[in-house]
Amino acid sequence: MRTTIGAATAALLASTPALAAYNLVKEYSGQDFFSGWDFYGNYDNLTSGDVNWVDQTNATQSKLAYVNDAGHAIIKVDNTTFVPYNYKRDSVRITSQDYFPVGTVLVFDATHLPYGCSVWPSFWTKGENWPIGGEIDIIEAVNLMTYNQMALHTQDGCTQPSSVTQSGTTGNTNCSTDAGCTVAEKQSNSFGESFASAGGGVWAAQFDSSGIFIWFWTRDSVPSSVSSASDSIDTSSWGTPSAAYPSSSCNISEFFTPQQLVIDITLCGNWAGEASVYSSTGCGTGDASVNASSCYLDNVINAGTKYDDAYFEISYIKAFSTSSPLVASASGGSTIYVSATASASGSASSSGSSGSSGSGTNAAVPKTQLDALAYVAFAGTTALAAFSWVFL
Ligand SMILES: *[C@@H]1O[C@H](CO)[C@@H](O)[C@H](O)[C@H]1NC(C)=O
Ligand SMILES: *[C@@H]1O[C@H](CO)[C@@H](O)[C@H](O)[C@H]1NC(C)=O
Ligand SMILES: *[C@@H]1O[C@H](CO)[C@@H](O)[C@H](O)[C@H]1NC(C)=O
Ligand SMILES: *[C@@H]1O[C@H](CO)[C@@H](O)[C@H](O)[C@H]1NC(C)=O
Ligand SMILES: *[C@@H]1O[C@H](CO)[C@@H](O)[C@H](O)[C@H]1NC(C)=O
Ligand SMILES: *[C@@H]1O[C@H](CO)[C@@H](O)[C@H](O)[C@H]1NC(C)=O
Image 1: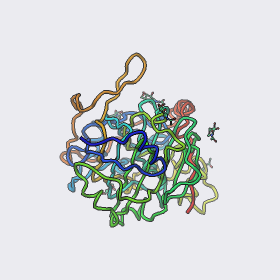
Image 2: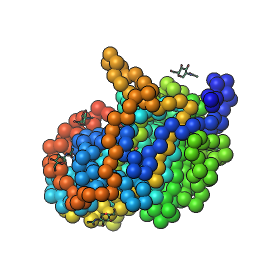
Image 3: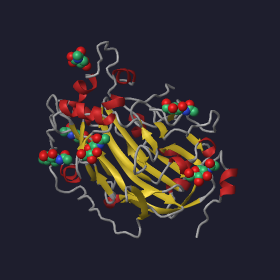
Image 4: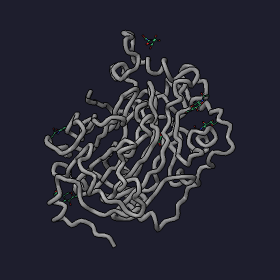
């Protein structure tokens, strides 16, 4: 048995990452990577992006989600289909069936992240009743940004202290604003072409009663306590995190329910596609005529040649925890969480690299009416509505 930290210890450690032992409870890797996820199967009605997030069948057939010969998971935007004006492009959004409670360390190892003009990828977590159950953005950036931006999104009452021990740069301390409480990575090679050319890197996110702490290591700096962690992981030697949200100004168990993992790529939408964002993150620069349609018109339509770099290549995701993963189920209008290990895993794994044509599926989703619908739907959710970031 491992020990969970007691309330007194947690209080003592309130402003520093907790010293706790976490045991491996879930690993997504190799040929089984895609077991235990749900595919969205609907156009992007969350962030008004110009994508159709395909279902698992289409993702497998079109090779938008598969395991490559290196045994890494590829999650990508369709770069093989000609998309006519007014239509959306196929992409992928997946959510884990398991929920991870407070007392979990997530480790994400990738060799490539999606980037390019209009591309908006993220690896993040959320509660069942998002945006109410909190959100942790571990990896998120748009267009040709050169660094990763981390954030929390919560209901009102959670902030980042004005003075905090972290290596990143705080953009906003109030986690209930539309932007969330953002921290920009300051280490090099955390996004884009430089992330890939450095051989990728690893993130670890500690979701703990003492706070939420996110570390990033470029490939040649990954500590062996991370790269060789198998049955358990120990955060105590990792030093200053990139982003720190101690519980001293955010009661973690009050603002965060158990979190499920999300990996998605959208195009344009409420962040990447904003004219001011698009033109200030390396796209359409020098073109005074950049407008709200530029992101879509300049990239999404026609051949998919803009999207050759719009893919995740993920070595593994591991969850280490002081308790078992949970699955959410409805009970009398509210959500309860039951042990995931006690219930059978229901999902088929992907067919791997064999068989499909790779010719892509034009989902034939008209863009115009759907954007109007999405806008109305989106007005009800503010967690991702607007973003700010810091230029380093
Ligand atoms: C899957 O592909 C079929 C055939 O192209 C299409 O009709 C359907 O809308 C697609 N479904 C999704 C969720 O993308
Ligand atoms: C945080 O932002 C929310 C939403 O804008 C606002 O209502 C709240 O007063 C802010 N809290 C603090 C501490 O500034
Ligand atoms: C934090 O929130 C939990 C759950 O709402 C509550 O039980 C606990 O008393 C709170 N802790 C503090 C220090 O306010
Ligand atoms: C917006 O900019 C694009 C080029 O990025 C251009 O093709 C289009 O005509 C512009 N639209 C308007 C309404 O100005
Ligand atoms: C699509 O992108 C992949 C890399 O992600 C590349 O290998 C492939 O050649 C591209 N396909 C086309 C048709 O350009
Ligand atoms: C998005 O579409 C899905 C599938 O139709 C639906 O279940 C969900 O409620 C929609 N979400 C929003 C915010 O409109």
